[in-house]
Length: 447
Image (cartoon, rainbow, N blue to C red):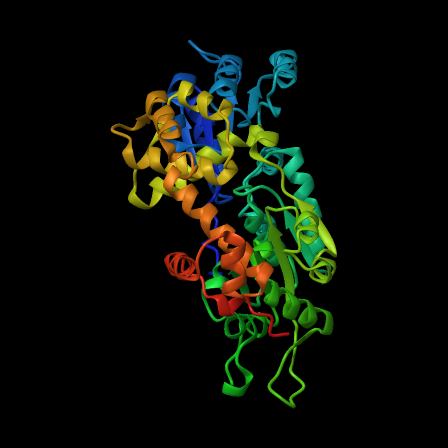
């Protein structure tokens, strides 16, 4: 029904790949960066850098401009193909500054002239990491949203402004876009960050004792989730799935800022920020009689709409690397995608959005026969339903369950009326309810 957040794991140190064919300078740069707690891998050639790219997975590359066999410009161009968005700093002698300027126009983040001053090096590194989207300690609140997209950054700005207030927030967006990640970010950026974060899966309420779960049982002295979230944040995930009877009672509680008490009691003051998410058009649900207008009014103080993955495709390589690392690092494995496989992921259709992409990456990692995941394996995973799309039987069951829920909401839990609307006899209708674990009494209006 709900889960309580756990403390985030400490953030890893940024990884910096340093490339220079001068052993003395390579050692000096490594010492300076390691003294600032960066994880550093020094290599003496561009070819060595490319060979270590997938294993080390750097957040930044610092490379000399003039090197034998393959220079810094050629390395930059290859990195732009293999790791789009990876920031590169160039080291250049005074006489090659014009070349370095042209390189920055071609995509390098910046350049440093030799001899490199320590503070200038550290300042440039910090700026490059910040622009690249690496989560610094000051930005830990947004760690659950992996992005370098201007569009998502704009939505994160809205989330940060929402976090600075006590206003309720409605987060909309298609399934799998990351609405709950935004809700967690709002909590983490707010003054309530040390309080509880409780995420409620609203669809699951139809199968249980709704009043007990959300509002508690005052006569028995048990707390519900509304009261348990006091001092923190309550996330109502897919709020449109709440039964109408619960919607009415919730609207009243939020309006009065009070969790109802037992008979004759005043109730408990509600001191929780409420964030609601939905993948459905709530205005349309109101027209259909399936959602209460007063509840939408109290929830929709601030609104954030999370875009589909198709609208920020530039995040796909970053998300792939993140999911791959999350999947393989605990086991000490090192996997990478072949360039054409990564290209396929970046251009594929993702109707299930970020969640679908994550599912594919995790399945690829589990089934990969070697350290390099091929395009064939990747295409097979997407085409075989690993894309996050349900099977025909699962889709049919989901449709049936949603249809039954709507009937019970419309009839207020009256099984006879619901069965007549469905043109089924009561016995068969009860069998359907049991099969889908739906309790008619959960839909009766008790308010």
